Amino acid sequence: MANRGYAVLQPNHRGSSGYGANFAAAGFHQWGLKMQDDITDGVKKLIADGIADPKRICIVGASYGGYAALAGATFSPNLYACAVSFAGISDLPMLLDDAEDEFGVHSSMMSYLNSRVGNERDDIARLKATSPALHAEQVRCPILLMHGASDFTVRIDQSKEMYDRLRSAGKPVEFIRFEGDEDHYFERAETRIRMLTEIEKFLAKYIGN
Image (cartoon, rainbow, N blue to C red; front, top):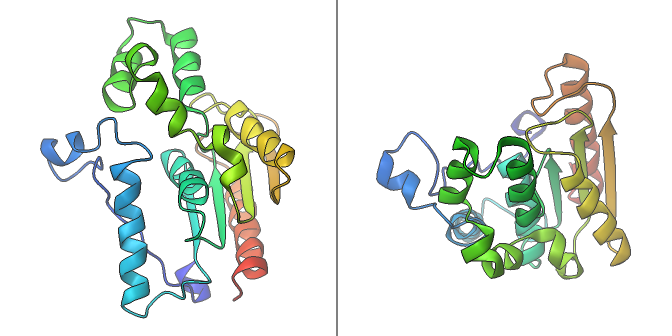
């Protein structure tokens, strides 16, 4: 994106690794909340510094970053002109349900997700409140969704639900499904090239070159 002339903000929000245990723990149970605020604050700082045009900002991400992109478009609808999510999460209770079905309620995966995202017994209200798919009517900008059909890390159902809810709410959305055994990591060169090409086209359409 920088090669195409766009200013790029790639923040290490709280919850990111590499900055110590306390920094990582500051993101626990903060999906869509303080973790999102860190991204929002970074964007607002670029606007204040005259680096970013407030009318031409797109939020883009993959996996958790895809969630952050959808959360930005949903919960900060006045800030972004477009959003791109690839292999992103849109429904947090669904994420936990899928993980429990696949790994078991007492698995290390569920322990990890419960500590970082939350659990449906104690945190269901917060999980629903911070699930972009459940608030699709709040979205104001165009959204591009991309997902591998054989993604077993974040199931394609996450993008399907976001797409269906946005369509039902009358919101502009595109959904590109990568067929075959394409996984969460877009390991094939042709897949990554197409992903970047589609993002480039999407950005040119909605925020210009």
